[in-house]
Amino acid sequence: MSQLEDLLQQCTVKLTLPGRMGWGTGFFVAPGWILTCAHVVQEVQGQPVQVWWQKQENWGQAVVEQLLPDPYDLALLRVTLPTDAKSPCVYLDETIQSRDPLYLFGYPDQDFPNGCPVTFSCEGLTGDEPALIKFALGQVRPGMSGSPLLNQRSRKVCGIVKFTRDRSFDLGGGAVPTAVILAQFPELAEQQRSFHQQDQR
Figure 1 (cartoon, rainbow, N blue to C red):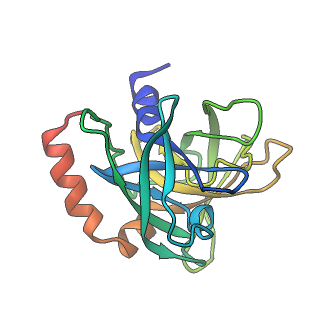
Figure 2 (figure 1 turned 45 degrees about the vertical axis):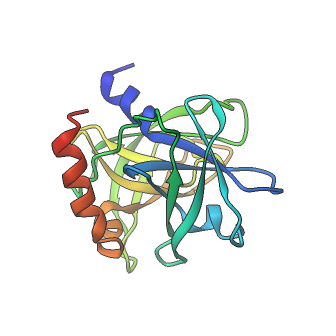
């Protein structure tokens, strides 16, 4: 595993809702802030979201601060971190083009309870408004919604995984681009700058 892939895994968390089967994935975008898809946490109804990190069940709790349903399908969670927590944060970047090699780490609904990687090839942006990143040659399972999508060419996170094209086969899926994330949560740009100036990971 490369250092970059290891760092992405360290940025990624498993999210579960009280009294609900299944889970989703999220990732640190700034200290104390987790990004995921809105459909992962839309049924939380004010209850805390349980955060699993690095095989540590119930490592922390998060509350939904902002929820943007479709067409954005984005949610920003504020998490109370343990006092000794030093989790890294992803580096968001808008760079994406067809044929870019993509990598994610997420928590599928079967086989890999502690998470697993998947690789893809970018096919490009859709004509939707807002546009989505369409990618192929990898399998996206339920539970992987909200995973960070790493562009291995730019070495930064270009989007957040939103859907699968087929949960049983390696047909790929789609993601919300970083450009859309930053347009909806503009405060993240400054938080990202501040974090990465102090933390070179």
